[in-house]
Image (cartoon, rainbow over all chains, first blue to last red; front, side):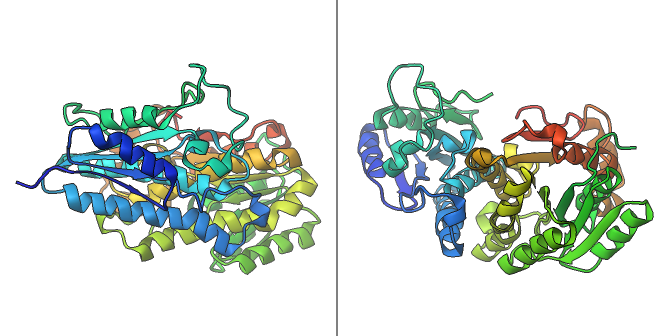
Length: 193
Length: 255
């Protein structure tokens, strides 16, 4: 019997990841890996016309490589006893966002990767779900990239604590039967069809 | 017979030599476009001959979408040959697309092979074609798959790339809208060479597939998918951008 663990990993360091890790400290320890897809060095503003080959690789394909590595590490850690994987990514993947094309390309790829993992790993008891949050919460430098979105219905922007609540819900082993799901935690701005 | 009018328009189709790409090329040719068939191998010439034999106009350009210069040369070919470029259809996909695999076993090399064609190819098409598409108020179309929307139990890398293409198209649709360029996505269900081979090995597969499609059959690359694409690259679709159109007999309705 191994000791249960809840681990937060990320592609690139960010204050969001640090804060989310702190918020999740009080969550009962369960077998769960949280992957934050919010690399602040990839989520930078600029038109696609100005993105050279190295920039494309760094902002799009490196994000996919990091996500693959994180999910494969999670599979190794959880394959014996099952567990939960929660991916945290920006809502910009659903809405699209100008001036962040490479990063948002990767984000929607990561979401499809997570759904595929859910389909493949469900048989060994690994659930994979996704929590989407405003892009500026993950990468403050992108503020304004999704200014076209309606304001949050709840009247305030999502906080790291709000995100932690959703992550904790997906991490709860009693919530069986939920995998491959996406939940948006943004106070009711993006409302997917 | 196509009812869409692409007269005077130039449409470049990557991966246009076979399967769905060939169907798109033939349908656009029937609708009156000059079709630039872009393919790595010279089997694209056969499609050009088919279009010309039907009374249409077409030319072939050697194109490796993973190579920036190759894509730029193909775009230049289209503009030099016809004076304009109105649409790019990025249909090419990795040769490994239909090979089943497990996500936990995927190597960085396999990810790169998928990304080189599906994503870097889309990026190269966008970078190379933007000036010409801005001049024509044209359109960029990316071919995705239901796997990109709902994930895949057998092809996770393919699903990843197809999902990524939707993020690419939606974001670029917003970025390019001020320039009068539209960007859309088509999610087809049609016979591809890989599917035909799979059915040859498992004849019951077609019946099982048909049962899952509300319209009761897998689509034809030309008369079903090609004509849907022809509409989206026509002037009639000028107010449509950032959308994913399922041309799949109703197979997937949850976009």
